[in-house]
Amino acid sequence: MPIKTCLVVDDSSVIRKVARRILEKLEFDISEAEDGVQALRLCEFKLPDAVLLDSAMPNMDGIEFLRALRRMPGGDKPKVILCQIENDLGQVARARHAGANEILLKPFDKDHIEAKFSAAGLL
Image (cartoon, rainbow, N blue to C red; front, side, top):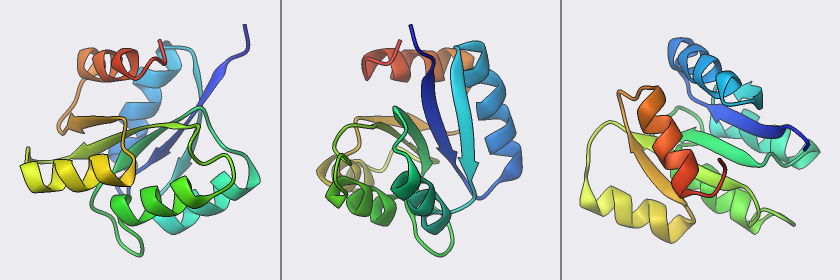
């Protein structure tokens, strides 16, 4: 079975490193981006199977990236898990409307990531 790919998008290098360690143990091949602009460029080159996406970033936030991703050819395919720091129902609704498959609250750990990726059909 081919290895699944995941793009981790977060402006914090610490969060990207933590997510990478967890997802590599779940047998994902990881690429990283520090904002939505960089992530979109990577997706134009090759769409990942999954995107672990921070909602609040400079240049292009998670919702803007998500809307742009979903408009791309094949952009409906990647499963997107959007990370946010609070359980704001308005933000959750905007994320779902933009095309997020799951919402993950920060701080997260292996069990939280595993549950969300499983719920999205990735595990």
